[in-house]
Image 1 (cartoon, rainbow, N blue to C red):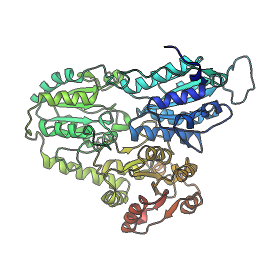
Image 2 (image 1 turned 180 degrees about the vertical axis):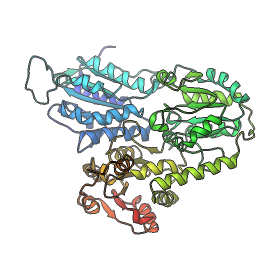
Image 3 (image 1 turned 180 degrees about the horizontal axis):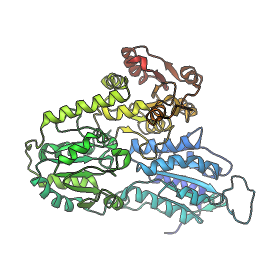
Image 4 (image 1 turned 120 degrees about the vertical axis):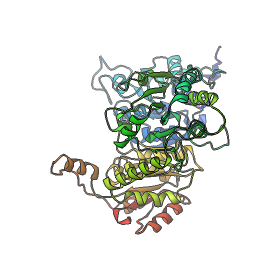
Length: 545
């Protein structure tokens, strides 16, 4: 289709207009002399830009936005160090299957001309080490095609971070508008039909005496804000009711089952006893989970019977667990297929519910013994946490306990940097999440050390007037590392760092701040923070328990 002359704009501006037409309403980033042309069209296109204080923060914001909204998160960064700084978030989004698109500038020529500002030996290749793919667009059409390729793959494949770089000179050249969006662009692009594989698995499910499901993050979805299609957990809960099977959830799958469901083993898959439980089962059906080291904290699943795997990623189906039945399909389609094969009425439980309840008590006791005092604080917070709150946590002992013991009412509402395991994730990710859900509660949980990786993003949160409660667990040290050293018979070293006065620091950015002395004061502080017009720092210590 031909383009009219009046549709011509600099390519940087056209890219923003194209993103808007593809549903992007927020971009996170930092402008610089090398990507200034990308900023020419942001406001004109009607996109909100959030100014991060560091490219790492911009990447985590895009990650949090994607997890909260179900749409791709987009970040703009500059050449060289800007891209290097966002590579940690790109790696995190890759490992946790999050739809993050980073668009950067790049030098027009970097081989024959040395000593240029922000020069790297191979910028594109550097980014490719931490994301799904990294490509350079050398023409306007290539830029448009790469953006549509990224968005299509976000919908049709396992979501992974992607990077597109555009030469500085090309960004400023006049270019035609991007092609119009395809009429079929938002159709269901999943090619594999999970219902076919479900028919095979349903035969084994019917015959099994002690079947167990393992539900992963591939089945989660944020709670619908507009009353649309029921959230995935309704189908998952119906599957347990009509099959009589028991289930574990991975950390990423928390909330798919009700915490008080008598057939729910909870998010305790990483507990050593779960290996014995799975060995007692004659059928394990794992849906939408890698069963990775970060899910199990051991080398093997430990199953004793048939293992069926369901995933949209073929690599998962042929991993070290060696599934007996492999179904390449979308997890939700597979669940629908199983429900079509099962009777409508509730099935008799195939597990002793009293044994499940006793196992969960043991798991809770273990978690509390390993990191004392945290579980009771989690229980107090959970009692007053709004049902639709979305939580973003960092690598901290508080989160390690909370991910196991916190009774999440919905799936897709607890987000943690699980795979890559980076520090500094929670604050900027919660900012991205809050931008995606401006009228819904968003919470940040961070530890005293990791919080300082991205503390400067408090400025962005205040600028955007986001009422985020920041639950800061301050144990004055890298306690998890200290415990690991002691367990390894190493004298603790380099685990204590000078901390600032976190409340005063937060107040200097314009935040509210409080240090509750009791659990009741903590609950009151959390409730008030949601009604504020800015973030609230809530400093927590072991004295609360």
